[in-house]
Length: 245
Image (cartoon, one colour):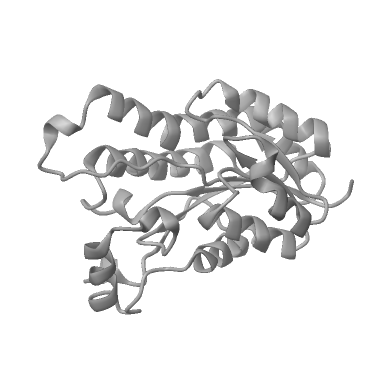
C-alpha cells in the first residue's frame, strides 16, 4: 500500500469525476464518494484501477467521521482530501425572503461545515502522510462567487466565501505537515449549469478566455496543487479572467 491515496468528495460526475480521473492518471488510488449506493459509480470504478467507492450524505455532517474511517479501513492511509461536494441554491439576490433559515443551513452545512468536519477527521491520517515524506494535502473547491459579490444566491456565495477564509486559517493551523489550498472556479460547463443562459453569455462575451471552464480545467489545477509540496493558503480563482473585468 505504498501508493498515495486521495479522497474526492462528490466524485461521481462533473468536476469531481474529472478530478478523480486526473488524480488516478497521476498515480493515486482514488476513494470516490457520492450520496447513493455504489451502482452510481460502477463505470468509474471499472475505469480507475484500485479505486473504491464510499457512500455518505454530507448534508448530515455527522457522516464525515464514518466516511474517513471507511476510506482508511479500505486503503490504510489518506494523503489527499479534495472537498468537492457542494450544494447550490439559485434565486435572485434581491429575493431576501427566498433565503430562508433552511436554505442557509443547507448551504453552510454542505459547503462549509461538512468540509470542516472531514478535515478534522482526516487530520491524523494527513499528518501521517507528512511523516512518510510529503505533506498531506487538502484542496477545497470554492467558487468565484465566494471572492466577488456575485453568484447563484447570497447564501451560496457567503458559504463559499467562508470556505475560502477557512482555507487560509487551516493553512496557518495545520502547516507544515498539511498544506491547504482552494480552487475557486467560475461557471463550469457541467449538467449542474444547465439553464444558466445568462451566465454562459457573460463568460462567452466578457471573460478574457471567452468561455466557461471545462471540468478538466479545474481538475488540472487541483492536480497541480496536489503535486506541489510548498504552496499553501492560496485561493486560486479559475474563472477565465472574468474577475478582471
